[in-house]
Amino acid sequence: MPGLTRPIAGATSTNLPITPITPVIPARAVVGGARFPPLILVTTGPGGGLVVLEGHARLTAFMLARDRLPPELEVLTGPRRR
Image (tube, rainbow, N blue to C red; front, top):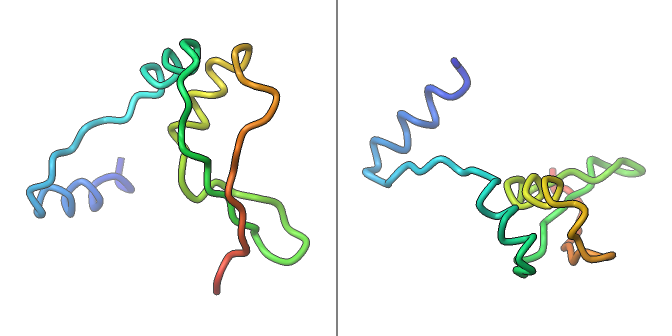
């Protein structure tokens, strides 16, 4: 995977631990009723849609356990800066 080579090389050069993010563990937590920090969403531009800036793994976990989600989720939204 060429797109993954540089981020991994950069992370290993800083001696930070690399741990794969698996959404199955948070999905189990969602089923158990755990609460998570709000997702951070930004606009794609004037009149555009929203994209996830932070919280991709949580969003995946929510979708894996969507039958256990509360009717509303807290999110933070804002405009994209240029």
